[in-house]
Structure formats: structure tokens, C-alpha cells
Image (cartoon, rainbow, N blue to C red; front, side, top):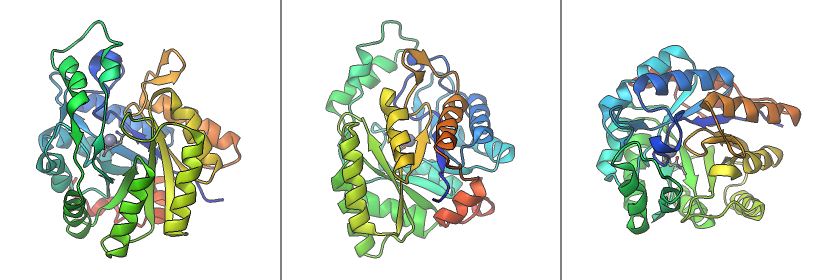
Length: 308
Ligand code: KMH
Ligand code: ZN
């Protein structure tokens, strides 16, 4: 059995500062939590930026460049930049920082969809910042736009022009067929790294049967030219990623996906979640991949060829 890659998604653009005091916001917080997550065993760090003044998701390259060099100096992990950003951003905004940084990896969301965060707003009573409530509530009428043209643009700008490879975010079985379409057009080459995403309202639910089905169809479409990883939102995070490890997949943790470490207990850091899944992986008799092993498995260009 090959080694398991732990990706840690440090802050994302889903959770807001009122939900957890441990959610990293400033460049220093994002850098410190990223380096600690890498030291705990994360081979890949999936990164978004926030405005340090109020924690709002930010697409500003300056906000990214305030922490990317610090992280690169502090650890050897693969830096993976989101091209999804937030559904409130335009595609040009979403691509500004990835184009500037030319990272080894970036995300690619495989379809237009709903991305409904509004149920979370109903659970919050004390808001830290004015932007949070309308940001979450507005997702009842927001489209996360990822048309074929958008995806081809990202493949060209990040893959062809900058040598990045992709974390293909698939929230539904339909997204696997879209990915296969790009493989058939020669726009995407293996080895593919497909992230199966569970528990986003608008995507597939966190049922184990969905994971079996995603694997079945991906096996059929991509054979041995792909690897899968799993992320699951909220309390489904650890159970679903454990199942991924059992089924031969990789795992993603991080405060982007869940703020909790156990039922009713907030995670105090990203590293805490990395340590937990590392313990589970090792208890299953498996070992985790180093950043160098992840680079080899995913055919990455190397940190020296980025603009970070
Ligand atoms: N937020 C996750 C559900 C992206 O950044 O491109 C998926 C994600 C998307 O990480
Ligand atoms: Zn993300």
C-alpha cells in the first residue's frame, strides 16, 4: 500500500471569525499554523487568504504574499493555492494570487453549483464583524460559478503557463465526468489528484455509500492514472477521511473544512487535526507521505520553480 498524503486546508473562506477564536486570520497566524501543521505531518498545505483587519476572505495577492514566503522558509510542505477563493469573487480575482505565486499546486473546482452556508448563520448569536452575517446569509442566492470556459482558463493559466498541478475538487459524481471530458480533450494529464468533497450544502452528502460510488466511477473513468483524497465538512470530517484511508485514498483536514476536533470541542489549531488523523492512519498500519514523496507521487515541479 502506498503512503497517505495529508493535506491541511488552513483557513478557507467558509468559516468566519465569530465561529472560532482559533481560525487563523492574520499572515502571522496563517504562517504559524501552516508550519505547525507541516511539522505534524501535513505534506500539502491548501491556502486561502483573509483580510487581517476583519478576517474576511481576500483575493488580494498582497495578503497571500504576506504569508507564503514565511511558510516556504519555515517548512518543506507543498503549497497549494485555492483558485476557488470564495463564491463571492470573480474568476479574475480568484486567479490573481495563484498567477502571482505560480505554486506547485492549486485547486480546480469541477462544476458550477450552490454553496450554501446560510444554515451556519442561524447558530451564531455574537457576531465579531459586520460582514459575517450578510456574507453567510447571502449564500441562499449565490452561484459558485465554474463553467467549462472558467475551468479551461484555469487549466491554461495555472497548468500550461505556470506548471502547476491540480487538486480537482469534485463535489458530485457529475464532476468526475467533467474531469474525464478534459482528459479526453488532452487538457489534463495524469496522475490526477482528485479531492472527493462531502457535506457542502449544494454538493453530495456525507454518506459512505457516496464515497464507494465516487471511487467506483473514478476507477472506471481513470483506471490507475488517478489518486483520490477525501474532505468532509464539519463533524463528518474524521469519519469520512478515515474511510478514505481504509479504501486506499488520501486525506484532507484543516479548519477550512471543520472547526472541531471532537463533538462539541473546537480544534485549537490545524496541527491538532493533522495529529489526530496521523494517529488514525498509523493505527491502521499505514504511513504518511513526506512532502518529497507527495511531490514524486503527484509529479510536482518543485518548490524552487514557484514565484514564492
Ligand atoms: N472549501 C472546500 C469545500 C477551493 O478552495 O477551491 C473546497 C475547496 C475549494 O477547498
Ligand atoms: Zn479551499
